[in-house]
Length: 402
Image 1 (cartoon, helix red, strand yellow):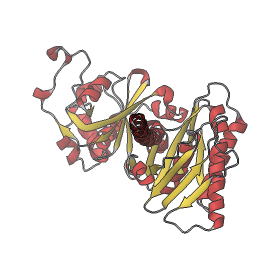
Image 2: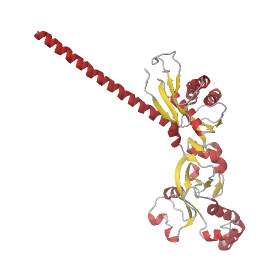
Image 3: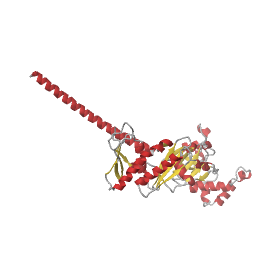
Image 4: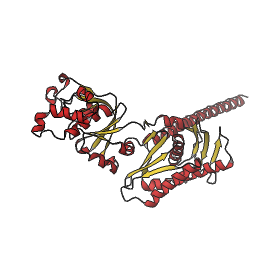
């Protein structure tokens, strides 16, 4: 039996819950002394850099000149340099200038744990600052069960999320092998974003990552079918526009779709997510201020639950003027969404949790409302039956008295 209660999928509401990434921010990979200070940086929400004798004032006085700062380092650390405890002072100067002058508020920081098994990602929330000697707390003084850095030059960071090395794209391995204390990793932005957010918006471009979970060798035909059908579905809904797809051929791995218009990309995904997760059919309204409201009536697709196997998908547009050609294109898109169940199943593709959870939540809300409505109708019917039975008893009693 079909659930005839109309569910509403609000596309604008979906988009409001998606992280928005600023294209202009820089991404920095900051080392943690071989992972020793990973926990300290995490718990105390900062990153730091060594060479305490070089102050922020020294760095400011260098006027962002590597050569001037290098000479200052050579002077202050003369004895250590002479004994070869410190070398490559030019690189040290570059790192200090990068830490103080180039890392800006809202930039993204990535730090590695021991052996780079785990990565923590956060957003910069302060400029570089120095703490006095009195604020440097060693592990032994505070009975702390993790190593604390003695770095005086620090930047505060609001940590956002972590991801494991196993879940990261293999292209991030090059980032890991950089031996600099601070590395510019803007070239790895897309892989970092993909590991952090299964869905995000950047410059009104919607990125959605579908995760292939099949452990065996992936079926190239199924993967090609998934990409082709989903692209075609997008094209039917929005003629003349194309969706970009990026694939990691390893299995398991990500399939990332990139829609140049976030609203249209989200509409396409919502349609796919609803149809592939609704075996019993039902009515649903996809709503958006810009695109209007489109009501779709989908028949049940599971044998034994079909009310009418010959019934066609019914589309009613409440706010937009759609010609017959456009309606046919939407029907084709819905048909493709249904066909996508096959490659999704064969590849073990997982839909992004943030979106599929929203779809499931809306379905449950509608089903509960529908169930409550039916129960209310049932109660009213029961009351009517009881009332009729009482009337019949009263009539029978009156007839007996006569």
